[in-house]
Length: 223
Length: 187
Image (cartoon, rainbow over all chains, first blue to last red; front, side, top):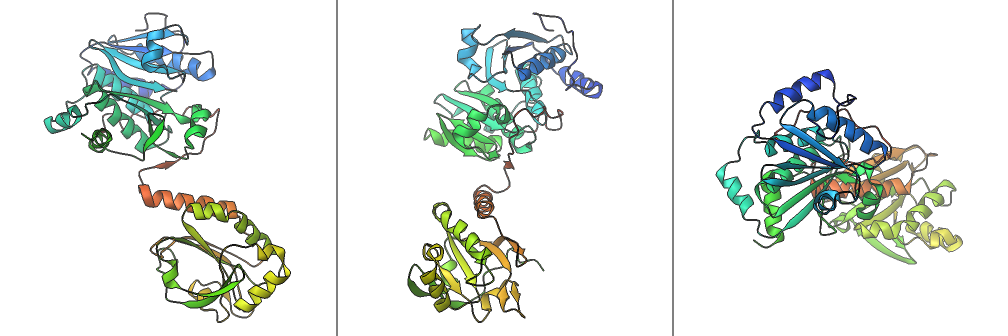
């Protein structure tokens, strides 16, 4: 439940049908998950706050904290990026190294919910070879995955990045709905998605499986 | 019948390019992207506009590793005569192919046999000389050089990245899409 405020408004992004499905998904949670959102004064930040309050009301395993930009320096450092609304996830082990920038509509609701399930112990475990592969990423790397909400390749890539980040503390990933941040689109001349930006340069373009992304990250460091 | 994915058939023509004549064959089209740009005839009015726009964007096409070949049913001598009297044509940097026998125009299905002129066809070929996209307009309908450049860039992108990307049309202020849970756990 949102501990900072009461649910006073239903999000128009969560229909009654979707609410039922989400409740079913959240039954898989075996541990609490804390959602932390940096929300500005703009329309999308308002939309996101309503969405999150509605979402966490569907499970007693979910808690929500909201702060204004600059209010929580630690959050800004870990996932702010100056791109609001920004939402990240904590579980009993701490920061899960994944954040969302924008409102997770379209296919990105899938990646958002998958991240909650993973953080709360509700996702299927990965097989040993995959875990071993992910564990071989030795150097810290931060990924910004630029997406469009209507792109199915994007959501799968976001999920792959999230899971790698969850399993390997060297990796942090941020999903960014590029449509909300025209300065980002202009800077990297993004015309197609998904695009992965890392270290202020485009690292890759196009959908990838978890294995392909993991391999790419290892190649980056010559592992 | 569609011409998509058709491989360039053998041909041999003369061309005029920046004051010189030279021969061009299908082998010259290999190893880089090619835009085959048909127009009805030299010494006409709509054509120079299109050819000029292409000339202005020529550095951008070159940056994308694409050569432009304009083609009409005139001889290379007529191309030169046109360049001699027109500063616009004289400034065209790409090869202007001469197809007086209609070989290329027939290969691409753009020859108006009665008029002996080519319809306004534009054909983009990949480095393997395979037709990737094309448009054919009737005589009076001009083409957009910027749009052709955009299509070239899109074709190159798909060639390099396959179908694992989605085109992005950014519309600031757009409403958030209806959420979908179809992909939950789809790793």
